[in-house]
Amino acid sequence: MAKSILIIGGARSGKSYFAQELALKSSQFVLFVATAEDRDEEMRQRIEEHRKARPGEWITLEAPTHVGRRILEKAGMAKTVVLDCITLLVNNIFLEFSERAGGEIDAASIEKEVMAEIDELVRCIEQVEAGFIIVTNEVGLGLVPANKMGRLYRDVLGRANQVLASHADEVYLMVAGMPLLIKPARTL
Image (cartoon, rainbow, N blue to C red):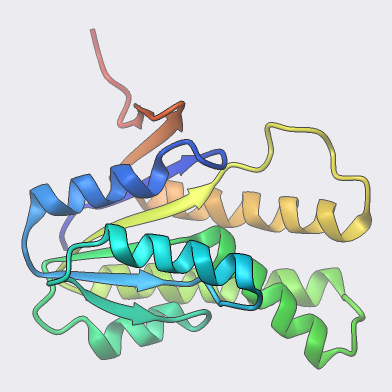
C-alpha cells in the first residue's frame, strides 16, 4: 500500500493548492477526484476555477458520493489519487439523505450513512496501489452552529476526519497557506 496523506484546515487555508503541489511532486499519473456539485452559479464558478488550476494531463473523476467504489473503478494506472474534498462529500450525503427523507433528518441514520461512505473509502485506500492525498475542512474550531443541522454536520464531519486521520500516514494542518505536519509528529 502506498502512503496516504490527509490535509485539513479552514476555508481558503491553501489545502487544495498544497494537495496539488504534493501530487505534482509525486508523479504524472494523477487521478483527481472532485466531490463538488454545481448546484448554483457561484459553485459552478468555483468548480471552473479549480479545473483551470489543475494540470491538463490529470484524469478527473467527478464523484459526489460513493467515492471509494468510483475510485476502485477508475484508478487504473494512477500513481496518485487526490480527493478534494471530504467536506463536500459529507455535504452531498446530507443533501441526498434530506431529499430522500423529505427534508427530515434522522441524526443516527445520516451519521451511519456518512460513516459507511468513509469506511468504503478507507477500504479503497487499502486496495488501490496509489498514494492518496485527501483534502478536508476542520469545522470544529469556530463557533458552535446555531441550529441542529449545523451542529450535526460539524459533529459528523469531525468524526469522519478522525477516522481518516487515524488511517493516514501523514496529516497536515493548513494555516494561512502554511502546512504544519501533525502526523507523524516531528521529533527534535
